[in-house]
Every structure is written in structure tokens, then in C-alpha cells.
Length: 358
Image (cartoon, rainbow, N blue to C red; front, side, top):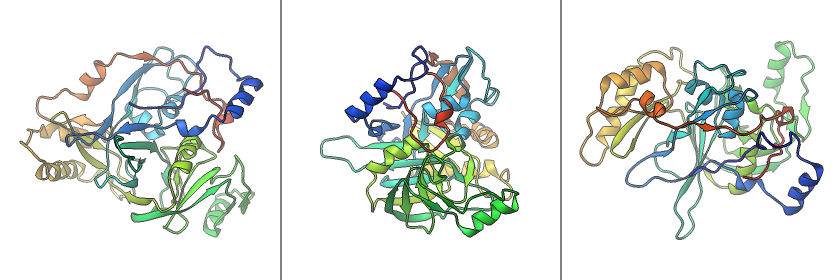
């Protein structure tokens, strides 16, 4: 079951008292209790989580919902294409796409799927404990910049890093009219590197927090992978130096749960013509999965595969013949009232937001 951090409930005072802040600090309550953690599936399945539906009040935005459920901008907007990002409207039903097809095995260390804009961490399993996966949304590289694909490791960790801006990045800002862009950022909540950073073996590629958390799920970086500050606070103490990292760019994911096949299609990254042959590529991904499938092959709905590919539906959608449509599945989910207050302006920097423990 997903464990999530939470803001203060909406029916509480908008600001936490100084006494309560002091109490939390005194008790040593730690961000290590946060996270989007799921038990690894058994019986050949490779899907975790469940779709949720919530009703929203007049104050929250789609981005508040996304951050609360550890989703990125791309995920929450794709799942709710007809809903206003900033003014969803009181009582509006919001689809929360907290169901994920895991990246290809082996499930070890950190796996980052650039196309899916999502990081997966597979902690080492302790004796007699069930294996788990922790997953977070990420901000990825902008156009004309790239993140290396392949295998590397975490080689160092930095708390409160400073940042000497690389020459090419500084020149880019200067050429765009930002003549006052600093060449150096000291440690602190306004540092684009965030307040916690994991260095990979790829040159100048870090997994780190960000001083613009609302950009998580967007194309915002120069190659690094951006996390919500609270997600960086989870990974930093839990991921040891030496942890293997595998970075892939796989927009077509096929999964299985309960003898039903699913397909998820993310927007391809850094391709000249992103619409070219999407249906064929999705079909090829399904065929490849079926070739490796153990047991009787399920029949699939090839027309549904084409539709999912053309609409770039990132929510895992059943493709087995006769299975429920994604619309039917969502309609069958009883909405729950979202009772949390919006993140305030102080949460729009690299600091971990002040929240109450779950």
C-alpha cells in the first residue's frame, strides 16, 4: 500500500504553531517516513499501485494534488486533460494515476525511465521482509540537452551543495536576456541544485532536489534529474554510495496483472517526429512482451493498442480482449474527498515543506 506524506488537513489552522514546529524538531521526526512505497508484485506481475479518484475543493490546484500523491506535472495533466490546472473547481473529480508499469528487469538499485519521467528505487531486501519499490516523479532535460542512457552508480552524496554554474549554462541564460544570472549559487533553498544531491558516475549528472518543485514532471533541466525536495529527503539517507543506476528511455511499457495485459505509452523524448509510427512501435512492444510471456497467451485487442498509442495514454490500460476500458475502470472507482490544504508559497523552493506526519 502506498505510504505518502501529507500537508496539514484543510480544516486545521493554515499555519502550524511555533510550538508544534519546535515539538516536531525536538522529537526528531524525519522525512524518512515519507515515500511512495509499494511491495513488489508476485506471480509474474510487473504493475504496482492503483488508480485513485478524489474530489477537490475550491482552493487546491492540480499541482497540489500531484505533489501530494508523488506525481509529476505530466502525469496529473495527462490523466485530467479537460480540467483546469489552476482552477479545477470545487467538487471536480480528479483522476490520480498512481498505478505504474515497472521498468524492465533486473529490479536493482535505481532505474530511471526518461520517457516515463519517473525514478524507481529498489532497496536491498532484509531477511524475511518482502521486496519493495519506491517510485517518484522527476523533472528531465530540456530540448537540446540530454541525459546519458546506460548504467552507472551513485558515486557521492552532497548535503547543502553549492553550485558553480557551468559556462555553457551561464552563457545560455545570458543569451536569453538574463544578464544577472549568477555564476555561483551558495547552499540554501534558492539553489537550483536543491539542498540534497546524489552524484552519478556520468559527468555532471546529479539526482537532486530543486528550487522550482512545480517543474517536476516537466522538461526543465540541463541533464540532471529533479526531485521534489521531500522526495530527495527520502532518497538521500536511504540510497548508499555505490548503488547501481540504470537510465533508460522507454516510452512503451507492457505489463500484466491478474492475467490481463496492460499498455502504457509516454510521450517519446528527443525524437524528431514523435508521432511517427507510434502504433507500430506500441504493437512491437506488445509482441515482444508476449514472446517472453510464460503461460497461455492472452488474446489482445489490437485496435485498443492503436488507440492508446495515438493518444499517448500513460495510465496503464487493459489491452486484453474483452477487458474493461480505462473509462469503465475509472467510473467504477468511488471518489474520496481530498481534505488537505494547498501547498503555500513557502513550498516553492528547495526546502522540504513543513507538513504534519501522516
